[in-house]
Image 1: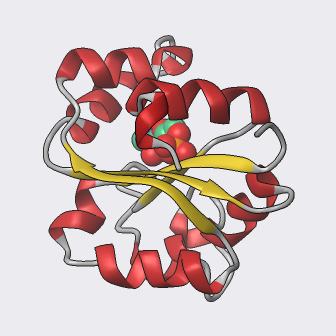
Image 2: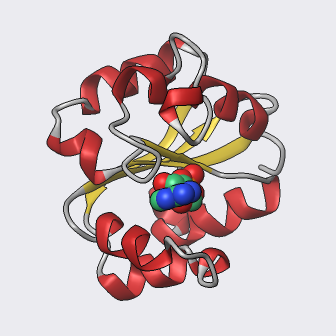
Image 3: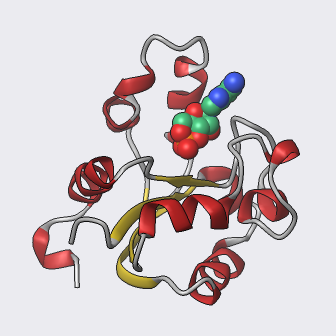
Amino acid sequence: MSGKITFTMIKPDAVADGHIGAILGKISEAGFKIKALKLTQLTVADAKKFYEVHSERPFYGELVDFMSSGPIVAAVLEKDNAVEDFRTTIGATNPAEAAEGTIRKLFARSIGENAVHGSDSDENALIEAQFHFSGREIF
Ligand code: CMP
């Protein structure tokens, strides 16, 4: 699957703001196929583990609290060049800097509450997909 998949979460802000359908529509329009999908909620321990790479950052506590604050949608997406193309589709981490038409520009509230997550490498896409889904949940 390497090179062809990425992992995303529709974050608690976008779920609470009622954007699940619109964001899945944008993902589909951009040419991604959904390989796995679920509405779920991270525990504080889950969020700490998922974002462990950021544990030394000043925003880590805020990030963990926010990501465990409400339901999210987790998904595995397939497309050629999936990681890079999805990062283009979602736009810059800070929505104020995101390109017009990107998911973060359209739906994010702020740099912390930025609507969606996208994997930053093929290796992490696989790790993140396996964090959320068992083999039998990925199609
Ligand atoms: P994400 O792509 O999920 O990966 C790490 C997250 O950390 C990022 O999106 C942002 O939501 C969050 N983040 C990055 N920089 C900041 C910041 N300066 N303040 C708060 N949150 C941040």
